[in-house]
Length: 118
Image (cartoon, rainbow, N blue to C red; front, side, top):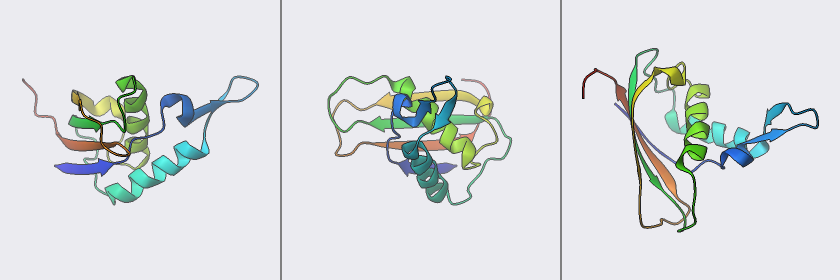
């Protein structure tokens, strides 16, 4: 099992930018977040196995946020850090968004091989 405590990524709206022609690019904030995930993961990997993700998400304040905006950025960063080969390997996903805010916010991510079943 891989356990990572990560900062919250920038929201999807700040992770990617758009050129005048509509092409997407990774922003400086997005590149910085990928580097943080890469160094935190320190080469840990499940390879190409199907995975189960358990995620605890702590927000920095009580503002309204869409969980899925943050998950896409997290999945992208985990793929780029080679924790798994592709987010298509995620077969089981559990996300808990904490009710009480935590200063700066964070993700606690537990990654394990998916063994099937409930």
